[in-house]
Amino acid sequence: MLSCSVARNLSRALLELHNPGPYTDFPTRLFASLRLCFTCDFYSFNEWTDKNIERIEIYPNWDVSLKVFKDYLSEHPSIEAIYRKRLKSAVKVSDFVSLTQWRQTRLYNEFFRLRKQDYQLTFISAEQLPKLAVGLNRVTRDFSEEERCLLNLLRPHLVQAYRESRLFSYLNEAAGISSDGFIVVDRAWRIRYVNARGLKQLKDYFGEQPGSALPARVSNWLQEKTRLKSAGELPVPDLTVGSNDRSLTVQTVASGDETEYRLLLHETVRQLDARPLQSLGLTNREAEVLLWLSQGKSHPHHQSPNYRETSRTRIRQIDGRKPDGRRSYGAGGTKGVKRLMRGGRKVISNQ
Image 1 (cartoon, helix red, strand yellow):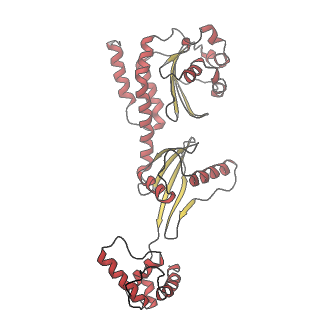
Image 2: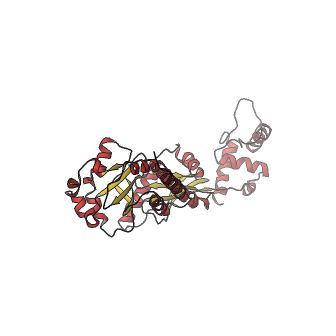
């Protein structure tokens, strides 16, 4: 059971941790929260996806080679045990090896020995991407069971606050482009965020409700664009799908975050004008009907039944025939309409 003073510090830490703020500032809020609860020499925060480390932050600044840390990370006894036993609670190095054994590892000698960091308490959250790790390090005195309990209490709040900070940043970026789709994906082409407009556009143009991955056509385009950019070759043009009268353009958006890609989805709807079709000798209403027919439509489905019946009448007038009650009237259904549609398409193509 936590003492009153520890419980008060925990409450203050949670308030600090859940303060709204962007993703870039999350380590600062995290370290401020941890310092309220733990007395340590160094505090660390890591995030990674698959085998790609996206960010390592250490407070106070630890002037060492992080490449060395990455190279020997597989020797860390806590991390090896967490993955092998699928542990979710906080662990100490001393749970798995003695201090003598810890000091014999290359990881300790190349990294931790420089600051004599003999003791560490850490947890890893691997249930989501990116994966997160928080480490507490100090020279003297191993961590107590009360401190382990305290870090376990903080763990779900740290993960939730991290997610909130990413969402805060995504929403801020998407706020100014509400009329377009906006997608954030990681380096494995998995969707981390997509706004409501983007969801609809992906379904409309690629025929699928997106899950965690981009549609194959978008993913292939983005991979090729990224590959050519890395090779210093000519850039791949924006991806455009759709038809002449309705299309979607996908383009990348510059970002300071090298671990993610931002995509902007812009829809273009071409509004055709029926008035030039009156040059074919048609009335205004007949020109409208011919415009619908030239786009493969029999009549405007969103209108009332009476309006649609009027459209059918206009089709008969365009065709110059009397209805026989057995023929359905639609695009290209009669010789007169076909003839005028050929002329109409030429007029439309010049718009």
